[in-house]
Length: 70
Image (cartoon, rainbow, N blue to C red):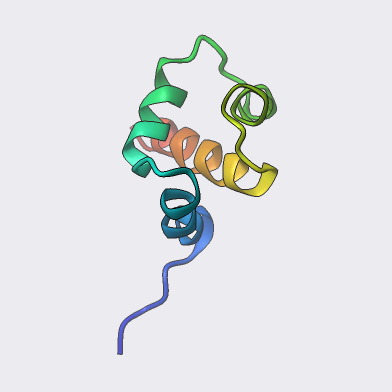
């Protein structure tokens, strides 16, 4: 039996399906943005790229967590 994906990554398949881009592209956009705060990035993804709040939040949370892990 495999473990279910948990946390923000559980949204990744639906993000890719709905917006037609791989998660890696979204994460590269977040990393290249001059914005650094979580909600600023979420708002930017929503307004500039048309993402829904939950999807934008999941992408930002996962990407920022990677920064903290390094």
